[in-house]
Figure 1: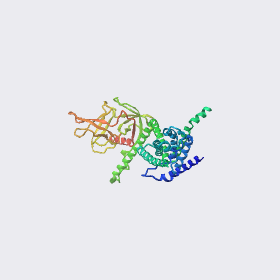
Figure 2: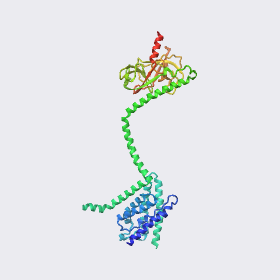
Figure 3: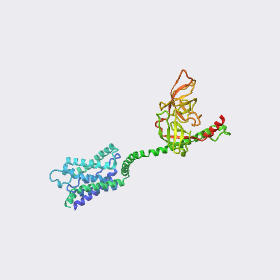
Figure 4: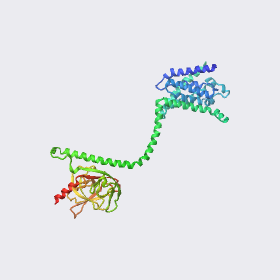
Length: 166
Length: 291
């Protein structure tokens, strides 16, 4: 019960931070880190996949509602949630990984960075592709995906680093 | 039932994944203007391509109808052209307006459109059959042209058909003018060099010969041959052909001129029959004067 409450609060927190702070950054005109994905990244490994999908849909939809891009974030986040379990299995420690919550401490810095890079890259790729909705300007699209992935990763990894130091 | 449930338990996650993704995609397309427009245009380009190919096939079958309409339109345009020429001529005579005609009587023509339904080019006496006859207003001795130039003269008329004697008939003879080289158009302005008589020698359907042009006239290859208007069949200035070759023979006072005919008689398919309204009046008057 405490767990559900704590995750609900974190959910709301991430949405608020994303919508109120990060969406207003627009550094260099098109850098807009989407840090809310860290909520999906750090959900416990034993979360049922169906629940994961619905949480992701809800999370994406909340971001969408606030940023007037109905469906775009929902699509990308549901996709991310779908591939989360197989991907995290790749990087999780071999012993008793069922009860692990993905974090720098549990995974080890090396594995967690790889995991985060892969997840964020995939999420951003889907997100910006759906936003552009065509491959007419592939160069610009890839540029945007890479820069935003970098920005998101910098924030996510520094947050994780801060947590693991504590 | 058990296996069905098992199936859903094992693969339910995929169903839910696909369902949620489709749901978000529907949201994307329905609520974002940009994506909606792209989505619709890609659909449209598909249907447009389909329609294009469909039209390519269907258009072929409507060609006959289209050709008929175009031929009819050509006739209308020719009538308009003659009207415009008439007004032009009457305006040019402005200084004599107290006794000029409202329109020149010798330019009073009307046109009928007709289709060639039988044709030959390989005989000595070739004839062309048209799909219009007495009931459509065609009469004997009307002249026949197509957009390329002179075709021939109506020789016989029945109720629904008429037979044309084309230039490619060794009995046909026509009075023609030689004009200086000029951009080809039906009405040709430019200095008239001389008048001759055009006759087909029965050999090549592309060439005819022009006779009775005296040696002293200076002519050159490429000069245009147009109708003279002196015979009562043809309006003046309709293109007949161009000079392809000529030679002076030592024992003759006249040139031998080879004329490249402007009409391709092998492919002629739609023609216009010209009715000169005052032909009878002119004929009677001329006969009367000869008496």
